Length: 269
Ligand code: DGL
Image 1 (tube, rainbow, N blue to C red):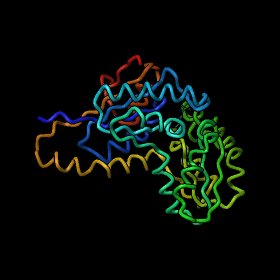
Image 2 (image 1 turned 90 degrees about the horizontal axis):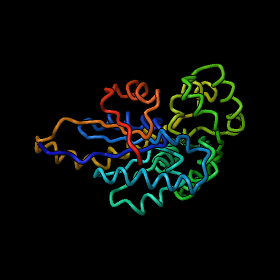
Image 3 (image 1 turned 135 degrees about the vertical axis):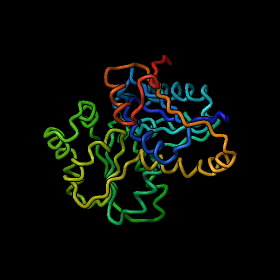
Image 4 (image 1 turned 60 degrees about the vertical axis):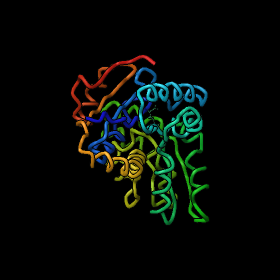
């Protein structure tokens, strides 16, 4: 049997399992290796220097395990540390910003809204990417930091009254503007789709993790076809590593991916 090189995915915590779930569905033969920095999450309110340092450590961990590609599922890391990660990685690195912007530009005809953590929004990474890719397209771009969304999701309050109250407050400037697309620029926000969709009816919601997974699948499909033809593929494995085995980690890993407890391991980086 051929031992495959896994696809490496990392995030500041367990939120990136939303992207891993899409990868697992799109690439059923691929081995997946996930690293969540649950000991130091959240990154969203940290300084760029700290986020870059942590991002390098997470990258090194995946590279030591011979991943063939790195998917940076975390929007905060993708916004701030892509250059640092690419500098030390000999394998391709896929962040969430570019694929989300490419889709947003395709489907928007009026305006694009972006929501994310404070660090993501302050970095203006999404706006910069839109400017590079817009190719003269004249559309409005607006962003809003929504720092209370991550704790709400982690508390399991996806459609709690509090989530509606907070979301209405954060989204009010975007609602008054003429946007037709909203980029969910954070791993946790897809879990708020119901709330966000009700507050922004008619606005297309773009899941940045799903877009990154789709791009990754496209990039490695040729490789997969070649391997499949050899008919020597070992059954796929999904391994999760976390820096702190918090009580919620196992529950979320099982809930998202149906992973058995023995495929989640605690490590130190
Ligand atoms: N994973 C982060 C992101 O996508 C959210 C959680 C955090 O602040 O670390 O921006």
